[in-house]
Amino acid sequence: MKKKVAVIGTNGLPAKYGGFETLTDYLVQYLSTDYRFYVYCSKKNTDSNTKEYHGAKLIVLPLNANGLQSIFYDLISIFHSLYYADILLVLGTPGAFIFPLLKLFNKKVIVNFGGLEWKRDKWSKLVRYYLKFTEKVAVKYSDVVVADNQAFINYILSEYRVKAILIEYGGDHVLGSFHENKLLTKYPFVKEDYFISVSRAQIDNNIHMLIEGYEKSAIKTLLVIISNWSSSVYGKQLKLKYSGHTNIILLDAIYDQEELDFLRSNSRTYIHTHSFCGTAPSLVEAMNLGLPIVCFDVETNRYTTENQSEYFKDSDELCKLFLRLSDKELKINADKMLQIARNKYTWSIITKKYAQLF
Image 1 (tube, rainbow, N blue to C red):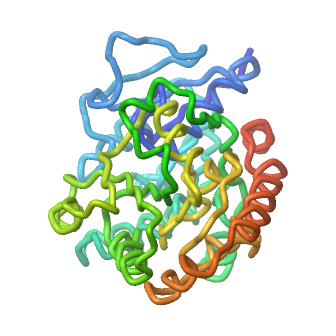
Image 2 (image 1 turned 180 degrees about the horizontal axis):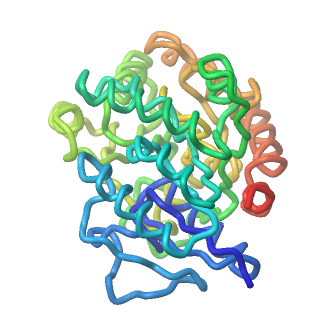
């Protein structure tokens, strides 16, 4: 009999939202031969008529997997999974306050730490307190704690005296797609030289800093930014302020993999501005595409790129990078990033690490 693994905390399958969804997608694709997966999905993001995906059973709930509803979404998923699952793989900690009760059941609980969500400025003080509390409970009452970046491993050991397991993300599902593409009509700027950046429109992703540094440089190369602009006041303000600039192209969030890969793989440089992500999926995807990488200078990004990228702490430093980096330097950077990605950030490597925990 195959072990039954319940995956809790994602928007659903097939993946079209973020890192946890993509991770679940490839766990299912690579490991369904050996394990029976049950994946909890939000009705908002999954077709309720789809019952299975690559051998995994999809359990669709009429709740949102994000925001306040995520607490109840996770709780219902956890309680339901206790009836059948051998292993609970919980992605994120919103519902972790229930973990102490799970000790009464003979289940293996693996939690993916997710990141330092409670530090994000976008949350109120009350929400940040709750997230910090559930982080503590998750780490203390899980059988295994997984973190996707060495900086988080260090934090968990220092804060809670718990040894977490390092498992990053894969990014080799991306496909380089160059000029001779049907999407060229939709995105004619691809024929020109451009920088690209992809992130959610929240202040800790530093989109404002990216634009400020770019404008200071007065460089002629285009800047293309892909984000969910309408999802926050921050995003709406940036879109309103810069959408009229002819050298800055602001595109709405793109979830089609082919389209996103096309835009990234034709760019001059990928600029990663995230400050609170661990091993960010968007970063390892760009590395797997063989792009030169410029990163916001935080410990997590340095671990991901093994200190081999280019880094900036503010708009002035980014401006200097825009003006300094030559084609030769960018080629050396790209080669290093691709080699690191092939050695560490592939789904065959990542899924094997999870299988060892099951």
